[in-house]
Image 1 (cartoon, rainbow, N blue to C red):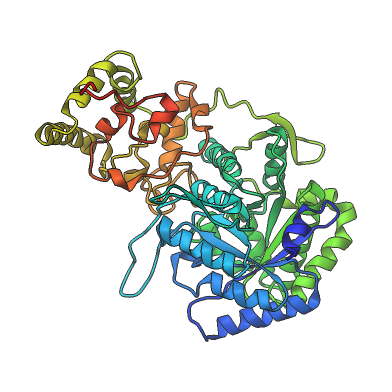
Image 2 (spheres, rainbow, N blue to C red; image 1 turned 90 degrees about the vertical axis):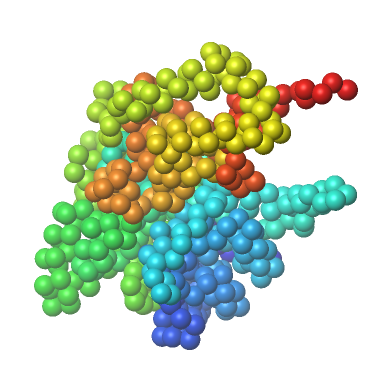
Length: 521
């Protein structure tokens, strides 16, 4: 069965159009009825290639995007389901993918998802088991025919036909935030992302930056630019990062504040702004546009498309109108003064100040790693022999584990997952110091380096890691293949034992093999 969204996105002569629907909380409420009515209009209009359906946006419960995707598919238009990595573990995600595959809902936008905010009788327990890089690997394996271990050897499922993409947020103000976004984007593509959708922002240079980044890294993957028809109320919320990752600067907010005093309350100007952004995104080389807006009507969507096409021949003249840099904002590339966009020359990062402290604890952790955890050097052989000797002896294992746990709780607030990732993230723990447990890079929700869950209180752990590594010129060590998810077989076991004895996820990377048995055959 043909996939019109996939075909439109891969066709160099077509600008793919997706329209975002927010179905909301409930099953038979006005929000769901409106979403289906909009889908019917889009299907009849024939100008939209897919309808995107959000998954519990803002961390609030809503109807399952999957089910509405199935309804929309019956209307003759492709759904693009937001497949987030929150609120479910990897088994539930796999089950969800089976159901989507059977229903022929094939287009997925894989994202971390917003931190849980509200629910029945209070805030729910956050669940972030897989991150987007790992989830995209699962989907890629399902497309090949998932290998499932069994008593008589592995079996293989029939291949699925998912077309899965990932999100990226170029609208970051600090060097550390932006670099870890791009490192993570490369992991997502290596994991299997087949297209990229940008987060929401209105800086044309930042939009262009994603195109340039992929180009200089020889990553041939279509990019979908994000357009949101922006009223003052929503802009004010985004300006405060209350919709994490959506960036509206003070300058843009002030313009919207003036526009809302017009007779039409600013509707005309914000529709025109959306059309102008459409023209720019098409001009810089986006393969598609993702259009959204609260209560956006289908007729308004058509206006954006028509006006955008009308403005497209002169799109370069519009770039200067989308000059909304963040305060002291960092750009990956040097500016092209002629176009107002970017050159292909990366900004010199060598002498820029660190975006987070990298002090005494960092020095201590580096020293401990060099002394104890560098394979086949210093104390590593001694520690390996000690843990090998203790293996299988419950009392000895318990004593060693207790000593390790005390040290790591004090230094890292260790959660005893047993599959330690601190070597992957500048000697910091993503399981205790990231509310979303991100082991492959930052989510898109931070602002000015601050964690979205603890604004102005805690720096994003990945920003801290980048600063620690940059101090020694090692920040590129974050630019690596995807790190596997935590193996919960190891929960509340000794991560040091698992490391020294070649059991954890670091073993194949560092070449640490299981020691030979003490019992000679």
